Image 1: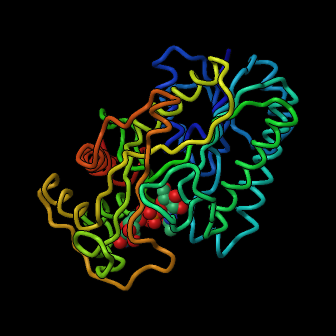
Image 2: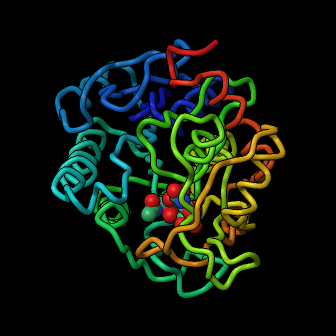
Image 3: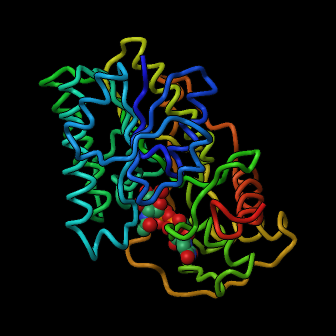
Length: 329
Ligand code: UD1
């Protein structure tokens, strides 16, 4: 009854591995450590290797009696996916397809996939429900959607049951500050805000202040990484109970604007966040937030933490691990 977690040494993966172990699950992590950190595993069993290594994956699944897989390992920079598309198709699509092939060959019947709200593109309706058509607007988003399709067909042809979790904007760190995000490999708002507040970079560029939102800046659904981890534990429970494949949003259903994130960070940290206003970033929609009711109904999952806890935990983590893992306190 072991759970294989690919990318378990990464940001969302490490929080999930920790919660699975706390829930009494047997876990083995497969991670190349190209982007992940061994310290983030907090002692969980690690096999260093590639998801595209068919023989390694089948052997691991058979030896460790793996019954479920949670697949996080992927590249995740939207900008880089547009300048280096083959890197993304090769790893996120080619690697994931080989992984799925290998785990099915080894008899695994349950699979949880780290998908993204990016598959909706600029959503036609807010709040975003799962029945909206996928409309990927980047190579990164397309790779996530392609693997959702692969999983749907492998369900049809091989009986693999899957849950695709479409994350909104993942942020925050663990409440005890032992694990958090590596800000050297991300371009997302919250880590950049923390970096600016800590004087580790120049002023934050606020991309656009003329959107049709409360204060003119972009509004997003920030979801605490601990809530995301809980979503994965509940997705496994859902599959364990024999239920059919599902794709669902993991979001809070509430949005925060860039200026609200800056103001709350200033309040929490006691420091002003240096920022300048810049033109809109190409492709950024004004408002995106989830309708999370499907996850509530099917998985029994709802987000328990809001933007304040996200920014509090991110602040504590970054200010005590000023250069990430292996540094700070
Ligand atoms: C990003 C990803 C998307 C992914 C989603 C959830 C991009 C383009 N998209 O979306 O694929 O599914 O996270 O993980 O990266 N902002 C600034 N200044 C900055 C950075 C961001 O003003 O320096 C603003 C953005 O315009 C946006 C908000 O902050 O309004 C959030 O941006 P970001 O963290 O990059 O996430 P998304 O673009 O929503």
